[in-house]
Image (tube, rainbow over the protein chains, first blue to last red):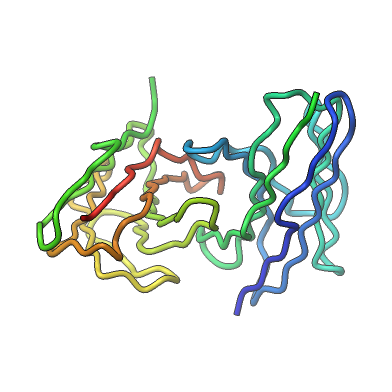
Length: 109
Length: 112
C-alpha cells in the first residue's frame, strides 16, 4: 500500500523560511514530486527528486532521503503569494502518482 | 501554445443526468490522468491512460468511465449523476521522457 504523511497546516511570516516535511511508505519508489496548489486552482509543478540530496531552484529547495522515506520542501524569503497548499507526491510504478493530503501554508505580513 | 484544457469549468446538474467532462491537451503526451479532489482534501487518481485505446482504473473506485480514441482527448463520463459525485475533477498529462504531470484548470461539478 501507499502512505504519504505531511502536516496539515503551517503558518509563517513574510520574509521567513518554512520547511514542509513529507514521509512516505510506498511499495516501490521511482521519484518524489512537490506541487503547489492555490485555492480553487490546479496544482503546478515545483520540483522532482529521484536521487538523495538537495535540489535548489530559486527560493524553493527540495531534499530527499530514500533510506529514510523522507523529503522536505524549503521555502525561503516567503512572500504573500506563497500562501497555498503544497502537495507531496510519490511515483511508485509507471507514471502514476500518489499524493499526500497537502500542507496548507499561510503567510502572514 | 501547448496546454491542457478542461470544459466546462463549472457545472451544476440534477440527479440522474448523463454528463461528459472534456479534457484535451496539445502537448502530444501519451499519458493522461483523471483525479478527483474534494475541497481541502487530497487528489485521488480515478482513471489513467498510457495511450490510444488504453484505459485503466485508478486507486479510487469511481462510477465514471473514460475513453481514449485520440491522443489529445480523454473525456470522462458519468451515466447517471448523483450528489455523491459532487467534487472537483482534474485532468493531467505527462510525457514519456519526463514524469512531471501537467494539470488542467479542473471542472467543479455540483449535482443537486
